Image (cartoon, rainbow, N blue to C red; front, side, top):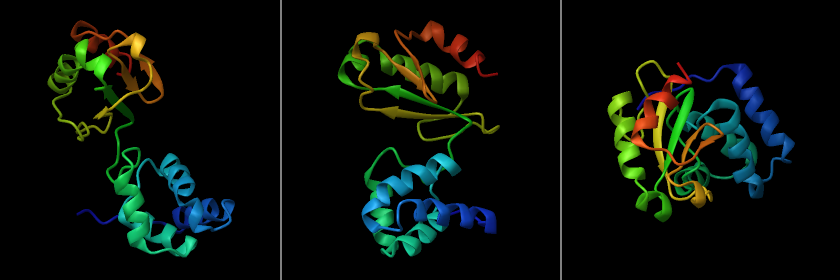
Length: 158
């Protein structure tokens, strides 16, 4: 496991976020969401600071991070790609779209390209079933994606 060295600035930012939620343990999910938005992921060292500030166990924070699929302990790429694998998307070919992203980016699910530009993951449903199959890159939604469109989508970010 890679050890992350937190700078004083980063520690202070985490403390500031915790304080903005009153340092209340009941706000852990909101704190984690905001901290992940700031840093991109939640390594163990960040979780330890949050646990201390919210006066809860590290195990509690770790349990939340590992339970909710939104949270990640692995750094995502600059442009995180999420392929919807919900029923409508799957039936309309999202598995083939996923395979094409894996082929073109030369990474598997959960991995990040060597240049740190893209990471690849799957989702259960994004609520855009009428646009199936759906791909998210960051917050941008791509609908009715086919294997033929994958290269065009990737090139938007190069």
